[in-house]
Amino acid sequence: MKNTAIIIPARYNSKRLQGKPLIKVCDKPIIQWVWERAIQVKSADTVIIATDNQEIFDTAKEFGANAEMTREDHKCGSDRIVEVAEKHPEFSYIINLQGDEPMINTDCVEEVIKQIKEDNAADISTLITEITDEDLEDPNMVKCVKDINGYAMYFSRSKIPYERNIGIAKFYKHIGIYGYKRESLFKMTKFPQPEIELAESLEQLRALYNGMKIKTSVVKYNSIGIDTTEDLNAFKKLAEA
Image 1 (tube, helix red, strand yellow):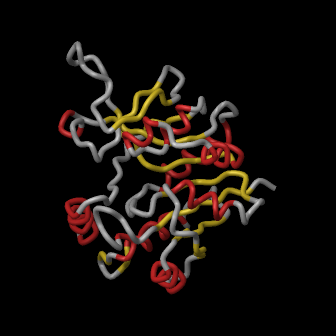
Image 2 (tube, one colour; image 1 turned 120 degrees about the vertical axis):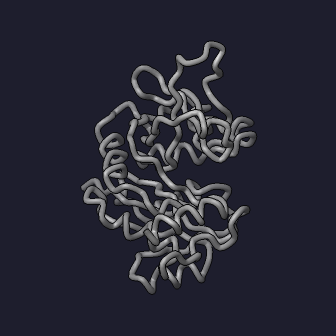
């Protein structure tokens, strides 16, 4: 049987927002908001919170989540997910759902799972959404260019494509959720980090650099990833409303 697992990486030492998974909004830690969305995904057989922090682990257990401890020295979320996946050979499809996406739409997660299961050519599946000019210069908002078949050509914190001719190109924001075939996840994380990944601090560039195919689905959902205090305040307003 081919099982599908959602694994939520949650580390304590965020550079911009220390202890982010444990910050409470409406009396619930952010990581609980994410977990509660994840367990609603019908295509997933299990949901696991993967953390390097005992307090996050204990908090997850308190609100009923399945949590596993991982090492502290992982360079990125995918490496943390691999450590968990190694213990579970029954996981054929592995979904990396970021622990800072408390408003993630469950239909979007279903789409990621659908694409990675149905597209034999894809190593990885992910989501993008069309964005407007006001977001294009924000380096915290990752942009994507895709080809005619929906496969990602490049991701960047810069505005891509460059507009030599104004008003022609469409621009897409990347939503940080990934679906992996099991063998693809292990393959990607064994590659060394290339210069483009280190320069942009985007781990998906490691896959593209090594010829792996990332299938994108265009959705209308616009995520709220919590990277900064401003993001946190915006989420608080939505949650309180």
